[in-house]
Amino acid sequence: MSKQQTPWTQATRTIDGDAPLVRLESIRKHFGQNEVLKGIDLEVHRGEVVVLLGPSGSGKSTLLRCINHLETIDGGRVVVGAEIIGYQQRGTVLHELAPAKIAEQRKSIGMVFQRFNLFPHMTALENVMEAPIGVRRMARSAGKARAVELLERVGLGDRAGHYPAQLSGGQQQRVAIARSLAMDPELLLFDEPTSALDPELVGDVLDVMRDLAAAGMTMIVVTHEIGFARQVADRVVFMDGGVVVESGPPAQILDAPEHERTKAFLRSVL
Ligand code: ADP
Ligand code: MG
Image (cartoon, rainbow, N blue to C red; front, side, top):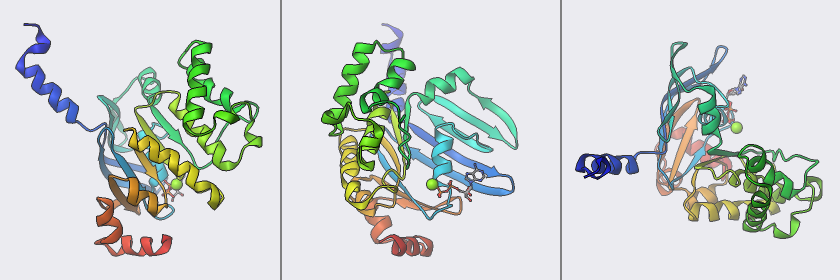
């Protein structure tokens, strides 16, 4: 019997299968004297959609950036998959991945920002092709075929040759989503992806995100779109002042919040 077939290994594999894709343990982060994250715990399982709500300045963007290693953390632990991204305490680095490992892992985490950040001198197609070919060293023809497929998936098959300036904000954001998908991410982080859009363009972007969720993508979404949270989120996490105030299924957090801060926030966005 090979080692993989021993009951012990099978048991381990089952546990691995159930392990969260993202595990944040007591994440702390400060900028100078300003403690922005005051010990955040969060687990996200594969295929789960977590919507992160909270007032401006509560630390939502910083938290996403810590997961993606755009920020270093000052305490706690960030685990994505089997890899510990950062593990620091009291300024002492206890464990940190080698830079090459970090770069490797960041490729498996897609991030979509409020501003679309497309390359203005490249067409939609070129924007989507750029990373798989440049970073992943995918063959140009395969990268192009995949980019065409992804643009079709976000409803922009007929806009492949357009430059960002020739596209609406909503279309640009959908190109940005296609561009993230081109790296075959295990996890997608969205930071207020519809906040910069004219209201009539929000729906198309949310529809694409809804499709991704239905297809089983693991997503952490910062948004003030309560309707989206209600329909799509498996879990809603409400943050304020660098802490998680409460979290739970959408119906619980959105319709029957326990904390006054959550109630006040919901009144302000509804
Ligand atoms: P949110 O996304 O919930 O609005 P942020 O994570 O952007 O909140 O910001 C949380 C706090 O951290 C704010 O007080 C903000 O001013 C501060 N902050 C964020 N990024 C930086 C930075 N690079 N340098 C200094 N302060 C920052
Ligand atoms: Mg933010």
